[in-house]
Length: 82
Figure 1 (cartoon, rainbow, N blue to C red):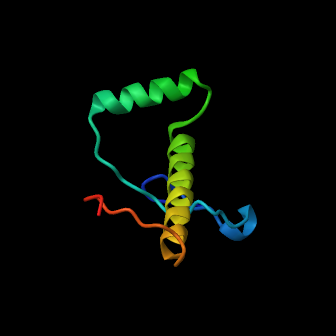
Figure 2: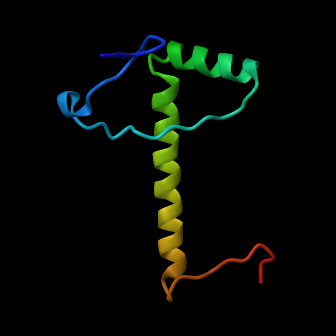
C-alpha cells in the first residue's frame, strides 16, 4: 500500500507493534553530525542506537537520583554547600 508521493504505509497489525513510535528532531552542526555518524559506523553501531542508549542511561541515572532524594534518610546536598 502506498501513499503519494511514494510513502509506504505499514500495517502495524501485520508487522507487530513497535516500541519505537516516538521521534526527536534535534539541531546540531553538520560537522558534529558527520563526526558522530562516522564514529558510529567505525564502531559498527548506528547513531539512533547510541542516542537511544544514552536516553535510557540518562533516565535510569536520574530516576535513581530522584529516589534517593525522596528518601527521608538520604542526605541532601545543595549547590551552595549548606
